[in-house]
Each structure stands twice: as structure tokens, then as C-alpha cells.
Amino acid sequence: MSNADIFVGEIIGTAILILFGAGVCAAVTLRHSKAQASGWVVIAFGWGFGVLAGAYTAAPLSGGQLNPAVTIGIAVDTGTWDRVWVYLLGQMVGAMLGAVLAYLVYLAQFQANVREEDSADEPTPTLGIFSTVPEIRNPMANLITEIIATIALVLPVLAFGLTKGLGESGTTVLIVSLLVVGIGLSLGGPTGYSINPARDLGPRIVHAFLPIPNKGTSDWGYAWVPVVGPLIGGALAGLVYNAAF
Image (cartoon, rainbow, N blue to C red; front, side, top):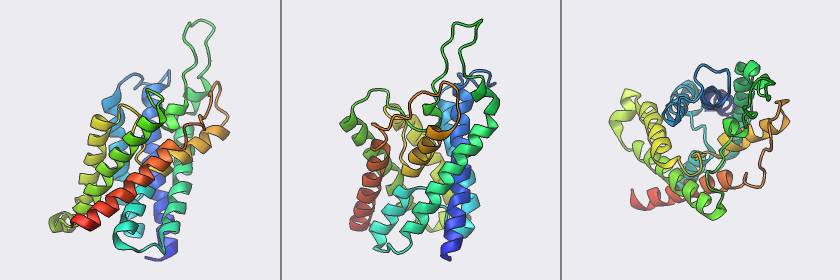
């Protein structure tokens, strides 16, 4: 794979991931959406299907990593760092592009995100559509949650590479997608399971600049947690995998 292939593949794959992920969050969150209030299970499966679509699309070009934590975990395990920057740059660009696309899909709903004269409803907060927001703001507890949840992602991803049948059948991505659904259902409650620095930071930057009515804060005081936590988790997963397998 050339650097250009990796860069383009990660942009396309991560954009699809975020389009599905931010899209399902918008569908569940925004008023005047047919899926409004359909719940956490819908969100978890939406993100899982985003991984499925994005990774399968990017796989022929870049391997479909789509996540700096996965990229770091692989680099820590293999000791190969020369192309890490290409993966990370593509993932960040793709995440921002995907966030813009999700915004355009729900443009009418975002524009209607105002207090209506005939309604007592407050404007719907929008940051949670793009990035993670903790239920209880405790930076250390939130950081620990993100580290553990990311280890629960990256360590199995690395181990799946040892399962010959998965690679030959082409079902590795499908299994990883189901893993992401499981993480969302089991470990996503405290922080919204970033487990992917690009997935959180790229859309957060886009949220800060988009002309969304009543969009509220982009919460930069918390933004380091869903970036640092997954990076630590990915590195730890790589170390554990290298030592144990």
C-alpha cells in the first residue's frame, strides 16, 4: 500500500464511519426526525454499522483502521511507526468530512433546532451528535472508562489477526463491527464510548465552526479525555498483545 492509498482509504472509510455514527445520533436526538428518542440500542447499532461500512470500504486501500487507537496499538505491537502519521492524518480529515456530511443530511432538522413559539421545548443540545459528552463529569473516572473501553476494542482487534479463518473468510470486519456494538451497549454508558480520538476530535472541531442554531458549547475543557484515553488504551493493548501473544 502506498502512502496515497492509505491516506485516501482512511479518509473515505472514516468519513463513512462518522456519517453513520453522527447520523444515527442526529436521528435519535433532533426534533422532527422520524427516529427521535429511539434509544441507546439504536445508537450502538448505528455506530457498529458505520464501522462495518467504513472498514470494508477502506480495506482494499488502507486496511481500514479508521481509528488512531487501533493504529497506535498496531505500531506498538509491531514496532513499525513510519506510516502512522499517514493513517492519523487521513483519519482526522475523514472524521471531519463525515461530520459535515451528517450535518448536511440533517440540515433541515438542525435549522429547526430553535425554541418554537408554540412549544415549551428547549433547543436540543447538539454536541452529543458530533462528540462524546460524559453523563457524570469526573475527568479521572471518564479517562479510566475510555482507557478500559479502548483496550476492550484494540486487544481483540489485534487478536483477531491470529484467527486464520476470519481473515480468509473476510468476516474480520463484521466481527469487529459487532464488537463495537457490544462495547457501546456494555461500556458506553459513562462517557458515550469515544474509543477513537479522530471520531471525537474531528467532529468536535466541525461542531465549533458549523452555523448550527443554538448549538451551545463545544466543551473544549473535556475534549482531551476522549483523545488521551483511547490513545493510552490503544498503546496498552499493543503492549499486552505483544507480551502475551
